[in-house]
Amino acid sequence: MISVYFDGLCEPKNPGGVATFGFVVMEGERKVHEGRGLAATPYDPAATNNLAEYTGMIKALEWLIEQGKNSVPILIRGDSQLVINQATGAWKVKSPSIAPLNARVRELFFKFKSLKFEWVPREQNRDADALTNLAYAEYRASLDRPG
Image 1 (cartoon, helix red, strand yellow):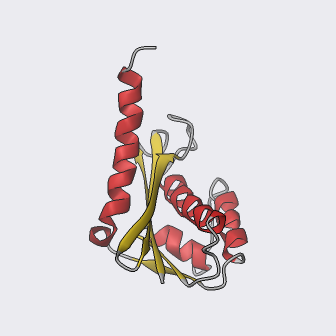
Image 2: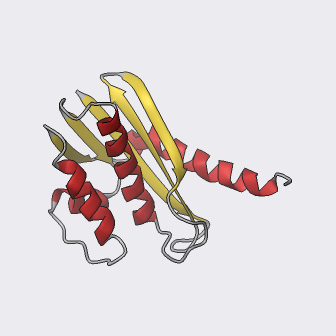
């Protein structure tokens, strides 16, 4: 079984800050991949926590497909109840800016043999959370570099 943990943040303000994402892919107890980065143009009014969370999930799903891991059971875990419940269809998507991201998740969903979503408390999502914070720190540090 492959487990994926995803997270996102938008700092120093939400909306309109710097939206970053992170994800971790585990095969059993072994970390096989991690990813992080910007989820939107920094300080764009469309940059939000939810956009960042969705981006983390999408990037993880895309990576799994690229690696040919879509034929094995996948468990997607995140600490955003909104994103998990919208991805499963339990909650409606009301935000026009989030609708295309939710549509992308649903599109990717059908490329997997077995894909399940599970909400987890923040404490169980530490690695993905740390990657979102690292992506934010890297962005901030890039502003301080000359040239």
